[in-house]
Length: 445
Ligand SMILES: Cc1cc2nc3c(=O)[nH]c(=O)nc-3n(C[C@H](O)[C@H](O)[C@H](O)COP(=O)(O)OP(=O)(O)OC[C@H]3O[C@@H](n4cnc5c(N)ncnc54)[C@H](O)[C@@H]3O)c2cc1C
Image (cartoon, rainbow, N blue to C red; front, side, top):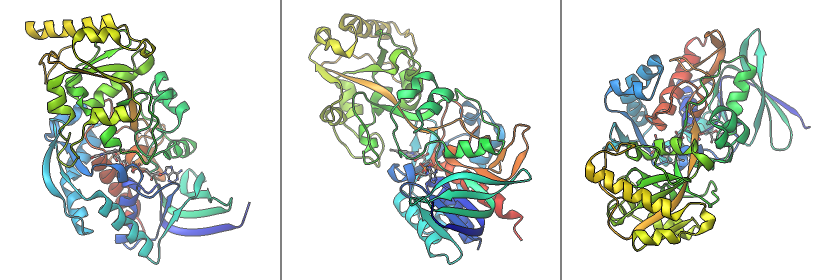
C-alpha cells in the first residue's frame, strides 16, 4: 500500500458517464471545487450511445414507465431546460425526432458533450479528474456522507473529503450475482450491452450508508442481441441490436409466442429474460427484412444488413426458402422445427382472423413472404433500474425515506426512476445528474 493523498472539495462525483460528467461540469460552472473519479474509460455507456436525448411526448404517459410521480414530474419538467444546459456549454441540439412511438427528443453530438464536460473539469484549477481509482468506502460521520476513500491502480490510498458525494457509476449490470438477485435468476448469464465497468459500486456504497433500495424485479433497460456471440466495450452495439424484433415473431424454446412484440425491442428483452433458458427465436419474412432489417432503425444510424452483420459475428441464424425448411433447423439450437413452423402458421391464421394471442398492437401483418429469416436472440442489459432510492432532488433516501445528508445518485445508479418501462436514459441521467449537483451545492458557504 502506498502513500495517502488527501483532498478536500465541495463535490465528489463517482463515475464519469452521462450523469457524472453532467453533475461535475455543472459544479465547475458554479465555481465549486470538484473531484470526478472514473474507474474505466471517461464517457461510460454514453460514449457508445446514439445521443438521442428524449422522453415521453405527453406527461400522462409517464405513469406507464415511472411509478414515482415526483420523479416523473422532475424528468418531464426539466426536459426542455436540459437543452439550454447543452447549449450553454456549446452543444447545439439538432433534429427533433419521435422515439418509440411515445417519445420525442433531439439529437446532440454526444461525443462533443462528453469531451466538453471532461475538459471543463480538467481545465478548472480547483477541480480534478482522477482516472483509474476505485472507491472502497464512503466517509460516514454522524450519519452524513463526507466523501470517500479510494485506492488507485498502484494501491495508493486517496481520501477525498467532500461536502457532497454523487453516485454515478452507471448501475450493477456487470455483476452477475446482483443481476440474479435483483433482476431475475435468469439474469445471471445475461450479456452486457454497454460499458463493462458498472459493477454496482454505487449500490454497495449506498447500502453501507443505510440507503433504501428501490423495488427489485423492476426490469432493466436493454435490447435483444444475437445469442452465441461474445461482446466487448468496443462493439458497435447499435448495429448488433435486433431492433426488428418489434415486427418479427418471437418464440421461446417451446416454440410459443409469449409477448406482444410490437411494443418495443426493449420490452421484448425484459419479457424474454423470464422465459425458459432466457433465449428465443426471432422469425422475420421478406417484408420485415426489406422494411425493418435493412433500413436504419433511427435516422442517425447506418443502413446495414443487420442479419448479415450478426451472421458474420457467429450468431445462430439461418435463411429458410419456405416454411418447410424450418424443419431442418440445426438440432443443437434446441428448438423443435415442426413446432416453430406451426407457430408461424398459427400466427398467420390468427392474423387473417384478426384475433392474435398474444395480441399485436402496432404491426399485425402476417409473416408469410418467403424467404424467412431466423435468428436466435438473448436479452442484453445496458443499465439497471433497481438501486438506491432517490427523491426528486436526487438525494439518496434512507430506510425511513429521509435523505441521507451528503449523498446523491443519478443515472443507472439511481433507483426508483423506471419500473418495467423506459422513457430515456440520457435524459434521466442528465436531469438527475444536474439536480444532484444543484441540490448538493445549494447550501455551500
Ligand atoms: C449502444 C447504446 C446506445 C444508446 N443510445 C441511447 C440513446 O440514443 N438515447 C438514450 O437516452 N440513451 C441511450 N443509451 C443509454 C445511455 O447511454 C445511458 O442511459 C447513460 O449513459 C447512463 O448514464 P450513466 O451516467 O448512468 O452511466 P454511464 O454513462 O455508463 O457512466 C457510468 C460511468 O461510471 C464508471 N464507473 C463504474 N464503476 C465505477 C467506479 N467504481 N468508480 C468510478 N467510476 C466507475 C463507468 O466506467 C462509466 O464511465 C444507449 C446506450 C448504449 C450502450
